[in-house]
Length: 155
Image (tube, rainbow, N blue to C red; front, side, top):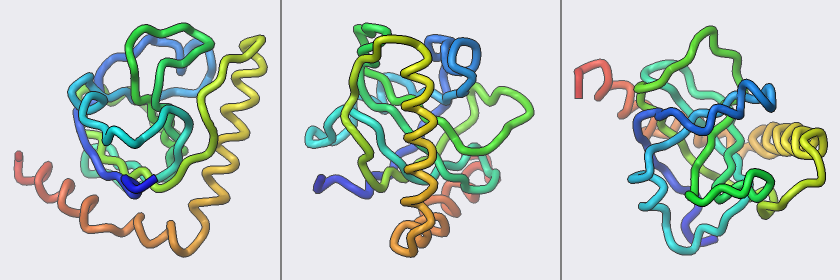
């Protein structure tokens, strides 16, 4: 995909409330305005990259872009699972992400367990990809330090 790497940021909004509760895999959701501005050549599916909440550290992430066929969503969403444990929710905080690669297309699953297993496989694949030097360098990209400076200065 020509659009990768793709950098974006936005305020974390409430999603469908399934990530933490139903799947045990919390996700941070972007507002529709961020989803609507995705490049037209970015197909739906599962991606990996780096994420930063507010002015905190940069962590690995895996992201679903699409309609989540298992749940038959009618609105396209961008749901980011940051591979890090946060003690509390961060709704309203600025989420900055760098999407670096594509793992697989969206698909429906026969059961919730199959969906959860696939997400865990996606997380492992993201970790493996993000350990590669060509992806590691993006963790220190100016995009993340710029967002931290803006947040600290109240912009």
